[in-house]
Amino acid sequence: MGIYLNPRKRAFQRALNSQIYVDKSGLIAYTNKVLNSEQRYVCVSRPRRFGKTMAANVLAAYYGRDTDSKAEFEKLKIGKDASFLTHLNQYNVIFLNMLDFLSDNHDVGAMKKSIEESLLWELLAEYPDICYFDRKNLIKTLYDIFNEMDIQFVFIIDEWDCIFREKKSDLSGFFKKSVKR
Image (tube, rainbow, N blue to C red; front, side):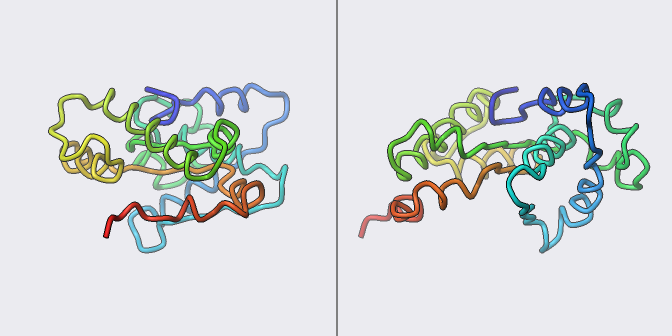
């Protein structure tokens, strides 16, 4: 559909088309196992240049509902797993590369606002006919879509640690609540 909401399988397809491709689809079997459990929050942490973005692209292509990636995945390790078809292309995937937002914003508060606005723009365009409680509130909008469509969201956040590397002195803007007293 869009840039952040269900970004399809382009990045994963480019990897498959490359001369060197290492099958990282085994991560999907583990993720499928914990998807609807208390362990559903998964953090893949590895040193730089060890394939985190590749793993993120694999997950986005597998779970994203706006693409048919069965042909690509059935040839890989996950294609032999019992959970393969159960979760294939069944979810709304929100894929964020935090570096994209960090490079466009002067501080972390502005970055957070940019993420919220970008996601709201895509969500409201994809689901225009839903009766929203508050079209300017990302969390409420996500709940409204889920309640109406009964399709879970899978969030994939790449380069999540760039905020801590690049803006460590400005983190208060990211975690600050906008609650008026």
